[in-house]
Amino acid sequence: MDFSPFIENNARLPSIPRVVTRIVTLAQQGDIDMQNIADLVASDPALAAKTLQYANSPIYANDHKIENLRRAIVLLGLNTTVNLALSFSLTSSIKEPRGSGLHYPLFWRRSLLSASAALELGRLTGERALEELFLAGLLQDIGMIAIDRLQADFYASLQSDQVFHQRVREYEIEHMGGDHAEAGAWLSKHWGLADRTTLAIANSHRPGTFAKGDRDGLFVRCVAVSGVVADFLILGETSDARNQLILQCQRILELSNNKIDTLIDRMHDKIPEMEELFDIRLTESASQSSLLEEANATLAAMNIASLQRTPQKASQNGPEKLSREERYDPHTKIFSRKFADGYIPDAFDIACRTDRNISFALLEVGNLKDIRKRLADPDAFIAEMARALESNVRAGDVLIRYSDDLFLIILGGTTPAQANMVSQRIYDAIGLLHSPSKKGPLGGITEISISASIGVATHSQAHEFRSAEELLNAAQAALYTAKLKTPSRIAEFEEDSD
Image (cartoon, rainbow, N blue to C red; front, side):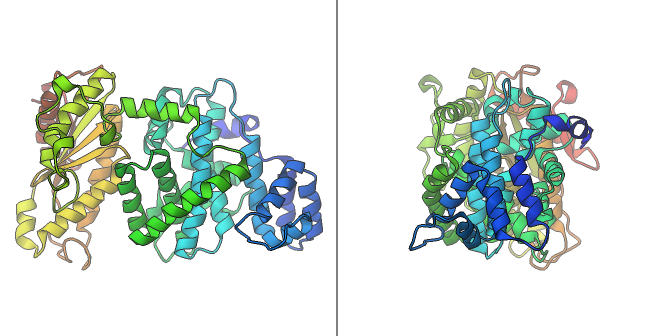
């Protein structure tokens, strides 16, 4: 990513208030005088009030109310005081500029929910630096503010898609060659924040970069998962968002279902306290509610339960008429072909009625028969493959076991470039499944590799299809082309490809 615009336009970037800069500088000097810190905090009445409020919060469960600022700082500790000063000052000082394309209420809602979730994840996993986790969770998306300050209309074209964080990131990569995590890490370094905070921001979307034994690995992974928790709450705790939360908590932090339930309960308990501390509404405000309504209305794949079906066009075998056993494939626990037959026409119809793009990606495992012959438990391999697919699609995308060796991914609101980006990510993830490992799905058999091909077709203003069946046929034609390609067997539909 090119950071020259950040360097050249430094004055337009968000900055830390001077009093907090002085507190951070003083805290880094080694021989700390708590009275000097207290005097600096006291020089900012709003910050002093917040510090006392936090020291008297239920977190510390004091028998007596603390009214002395120095005593409050001694109770909290230096690191907590510094991190709180940064958190309070940034949330209060960074306001929405005129003409901004970024939805600031949604941004701060996600940031504060992520901060709270990072702290709770730290408690559940045994990470000790809880207040540092809170700050890193809060700042993991701060690069979006920096981008917005340099180009006020950058996020404007996303509109309601800002609700879907992975789509925001893909949009940034497509238009800037990098994402807000990179921009945020640059800004954190520019501010002189702790190296571990910068590291967590930089890798907030790449937790797999760190092995489980790495010194900062748990810290970084807690921050990464905190964003998924925030998205779960923002998206209305739908079944799809919950499945994604469970998947990421288990895969990245190895949390049990009981701990995930505990996490959700704690988050619900924390929201009123956070709203009071930061003077911000974390439950839906009018503008956030409107944004979510728009997103649900225009993204067909966002939430199956919210689909508004046209009675005259309703499929006889619509997805809502199926039992749970019929809706899901028994081996992979993802959606079944029966579900797809009713859902696909609805998803395509809504995309057409709302003038939204929709993409179908068909993935075929070309050598599945050979793999079945070689493995003692081939169904475990298919289930492992489905988990890899689930980990790499976006929130709101619909993953279907279309046939024995075919998977269908329905991507709402995607350009061809975005659909290709998701497909490439899926293809790369599948390629890792045949890595030699006795515990892996191939059971240590290294001479078997997975032969996968993906065909993608997109319905858009540039290329309109007349029906869902026609779009699916185009994806199948692209899949045929993909089988002939090397080394990456991914192909987009072209008019002359059939």
